[in-house]
Length: 357
Image 1 (cartoon, rainbow, N blue to C red):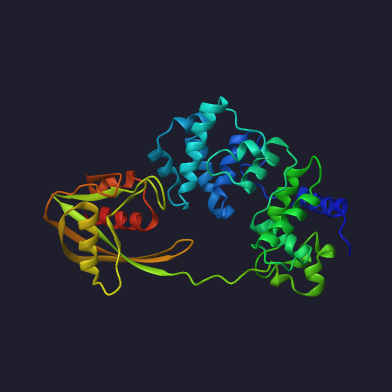
Image 2: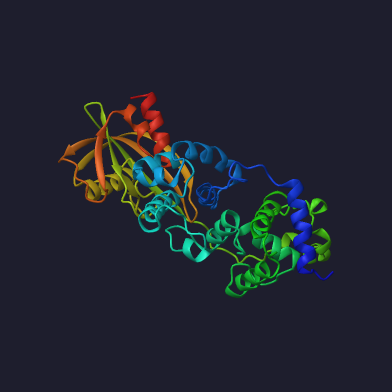
């Protein structure tokens, strides 16, 4: 059937009024809380975000408190949620709002996009939810719902496919209700119009859904084939001296920026693990090390690659470590590692060290 703008929006909003998820950031008049939630929700499931959001708001209850915090405190509060550039950008943006806007978060999508870490979707979501602006939004859930309801056959991430989905998002946006409409699409995509096994019988838009009528709902959105994700073999040195262990803080930019780690790096093709670790430590710290017993093997998947990390107990053979690549290096007691923000693998190593110093 032909989908009219009023019919689709009305059906979706009526469903949302009865079935909206009870989330700690909803119903809040505080734009800061909405902003924090939208940043945390980027590429992260709601269930994972809720406890982090609650702790974050207790630790940084206002934009002013966040802006006054240190980067290390911010990263520590974010630890475990992943995609740490989000935390760094949120902190930088808070400082920018304090300095340039007198502590008042911009109320328009254009103004929000001037802040670090705020793209088109996040700006539209904040502007519509927190400030009542008529802004259409488009993320993974939105793409899936719209691609199915309107049977969009263009690849969703292609230039033409993206343009078509934005067109549909704007075309059906109800004036004055954009915030609820955007949240309704989000809830529908998360709970009913799921990537696999959508529960179409419960969908408020089922009678409008062109893909469902054709039986191709699980083939929408059309996704282009992605290249296989590579796996990297890396090593890490647990460098010990006089009961202390050496850790390095990564530069503030890039993957895990500002986080602490056990030094090491990628193994080159044909290179033995101990030799690769000695080379990496020579390059990063300017010292020679003795590679001792294996400490553990750790695996982790990032967005675009996977790593298998081999950790070794090590001691200095020659020289004094110098931070040639890291922002900072530090000798610490194993018990002090808990107070340093770390990525998942390094936190696992630190936990094992603390148990067996």
